[in-house]
Image (cartoon, rainbow, N blue to C red; front, side, top):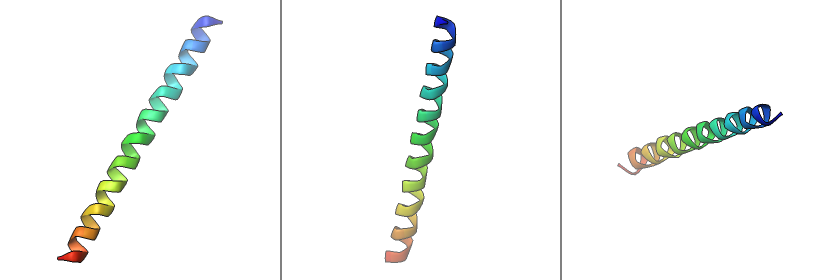
Length: 39
């Protein structure tokens, strides 16, 4: 029971980190596009 709970927690943490990375790269991409638009 405990091991299953730990596995689920690890998975959710991994998915959350992946989401954060995707979001940060997405924001970076938008900033680059805006910067090119200003140029």
